Amino acid sequence: MFVGIDLGTSAIKAVLVDDSQTVVGSQSHPLTISSPHDGWNEQDPHDWWVGTLAVLDALAAAHPQQMSGVRGIGLSGQQHGAVLLDAGGEVLRPCILWNDVRATAECAEFEHRFPHSRQVCGNVAMPGFTAPKLIWVARHEPEIFAATRHVLLPKAWLRYRLTGEMIEDMSDASGTLWLDVGHRRWSDDALAASGLTRHAMPALVEGTAPAGRLHDVLARRWDMKTRPVLAGSAGDNAAGAVGLGAVQAGSAFLSLGTSGVLWVTTDRFRPHPQGGIHAFCHAVPRMWHQMGVTLSAASSLAWWSRTTGVTETALLAELPPQVTRPSPVLFLPYLSGERTPHNDGTIRGVFAGLSSGTTRAEMTQAVLEGVAFSFRDVVDVLAEAGSHLTQADVIGGGSRSRLWISILASVTGLSLHRLAHGEQGGAFGAARLARLAVTGEAVDSVCLPPQRVETVSPDAALAATYATPLARYRALYPAVRDAMRVSAPSMVSP
Image (cartoon, rainbow, N blue to C red):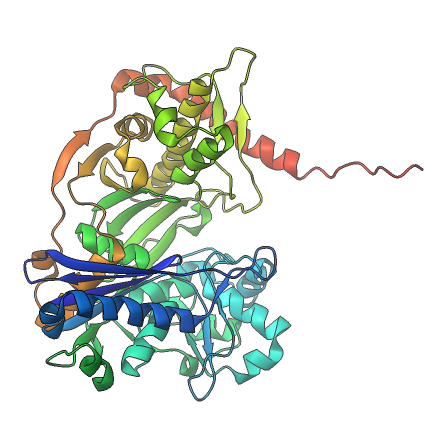
């Protein structure tokens, strides 16, 4: 038996998985975010601990026999968060989360101090990453920075509480901007740019490697026969990839969730930071990945539903089962800015091409197409980065709409595979990593892909009709960006 724990932003989730890779139990505990100022997002790590104990207690109560036989525990974690500890290992302040933008100015400072950061770390400095956060703390909370002796990512702190060990895996470490991603080791130059040394960093291991054992007191709490091994584990996206079996070079998946992700596994480090592509280590040895992100994917349809007061299901029901031509309306899905390819946190969404005859159905179709155009941008930038995709598995809440998948296929040119069980999530991938850490089995023998139940291929005729609206969509971005930067005229009389 193996346990996978996913430390997410909105919840702690845990699954209990048997030797046939069947999920025999799952539990979840909600989390909340504190936003003391606009653009700030924090969580108290102790709330993660309370949630972790709650889900494991609940699993033990519901499945006592299976929990007693647990041999390994894997972790999946929200990336980029900064947990600062003093010399005694105590938390100094709330964790600054991945979606916190207070360190925007510090991104430029980091790259000024470390001019080769994009080549070494594989990514443009963004406020969500960990390194700029530490520069912000040093500047605005100098007493906290002076007391900081250890910096851990969220799941590494959870491991510390579970085992007493400070250990991190390569995939999660890639999201700090302190890792030499190509060589899979801490970069002294990157750390120095944040005023740190590697003495503040946890030890590094592969996600499949053993990385500590559960404290004896906790093993007794859940009546476990032996102290389970903890795996090196993974950041959330890498754990999801392990759960989907995306462990071979060229494996790709498109996640149509709240935000959108297009992931491709690579057999070497392929940075392309100028296009807003993330290049990280994978959670399995000797593998990396590239990832493009669109910040408002399924959340765009959710926003349109809230705005119209009509359920998403009802909005989609107003559309035909298969579109035959593009909507006359264009939609830019930049409701929260955009990551790939623009790396622009200030851009916002737009409807364009409205007329007195525009229908709600045409606007709904435009929302679906706008998200698809955003993914097409990601596909093209990935091609520039050396990853020429022709197919991908598709997951996420939006994948339930076959219409949306068909639009995505025709716009992106990808054959998209719908899956029988594609929603296991990071906790399932973490459980697989736990198994690998315990048994030493080959990655390919454990990380099998779920069954594909349907392949939606591009419609050649429809794809041809999207060429013009795609060009118009791309032309809108610089126009909207420049318009938003125009200062409002002064209302003060001369």
